[in-house]
Image (tube, rainbow, N blue to C red; front, side, top):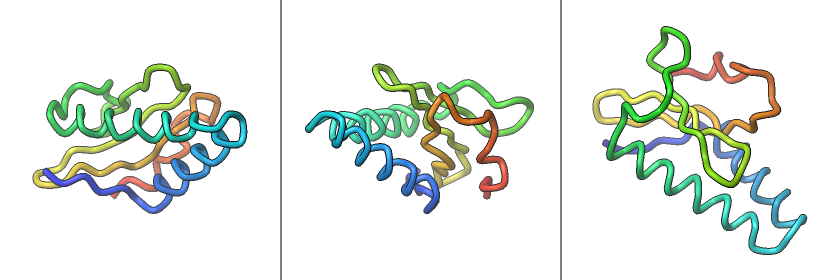
Length: 98
């Protein structure tokens, strides 16, 4: 299965990494590694995340950072829909679902 980040999800990740780097050098890199580790975990175990409602979308909650990786596993592709901060409105990313 191949991971594919939607452009909006990549932008969210890059913006968050930049913001954490400004706060403390190295912290943004830690966030990026946590997201990469989460994607690797989800690739190995696609059903590990909590299901969002009655949809095929799931979220995997990161440790240390207030973010979730929102994804959908299709045959052959793991769609990363959002790198969602926990303070954002729940489900703001719904229109992105491929």
